[in-house]
Image (cartoon, rainbow, N blue to C red):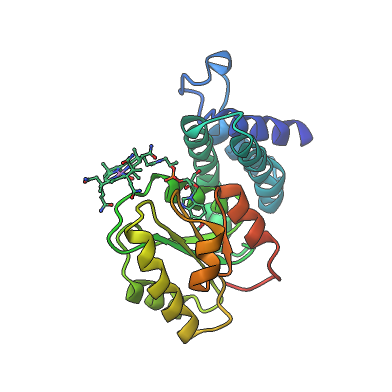
Length: 225
Ligand code: B1M
């Protein structure tokens, strides 16, 4: 069992999606995260164990390497694809509650902003860390965040912005969220955003990278979806 989980972990770390995928070259014609997750399920390994000790463990390493600039955006995207291909086989267990997520995060790029590559990576890393993610997409107005929060009252909210102009829209969104529910945690990020800005607009946290967002979420007390 440990062998297959270690292989699965390696596939996520190296971005090996499935047997057909040519990347990485030295793993050509080897099973990828897709086949290995399927096999692990068929072997009767608990879905939670497959998720935690295979997929999430791999994604954790990926996050650390990205933070330390040992890997770059394309590597991260391949790892995320590998993870998603494995997660497909675990979906039925989410539905049947055999897998408990750690909580829900609502994430979106704020109003006026169409950049979504970084936000998508953050969303994938958070999914990979065992959270349920509700991705509202780009150009998200405040009322859409509020609506999503009504549907997921215990969720944490994540805001992303890539423009110095649109980051200013975060202030109104944070204010409205806090007005509706003062206990809701809000984390913000994106290239022009800083810790000082987060403090100024009343957000609970700022992270420059996906791993920081994962660490912030994982440090929160356990919550329900
Ligand atoms: Co635009 N763009 N863009 N752009 N774009 C930038 C951001 C810019 C810096 C380019 C430049 O001038 N050098 C500049 C912003 C200048 C500024 O405001 N200071 C800019 C501009 C000006 C514009 C337009 C206004 C251009 C125009 O039309 N005149 C326009 C605006 C459109 C709009 O949004 N309304 C525009 C449009 C576009 C495209 C649509 C063409 C495209 C986006 C495509 C897409 O996302 N689907 C695009 C792109 C690709 C870029 C650059 C080249 C790359 C952005 C990116 O994806 N980076 C960018 C220049 C650059 O960065 N080199 C640029 C990679 C990504 C992985 O990093 O998004 O920073 P990033 O995310 C990181 C972290 O920031 C963090 O983690 C991520 C992973 O490490 N993070 C979080 C992000 N969100 C987080 C949330 C968290 C925590 C961490 O917690 C919730």
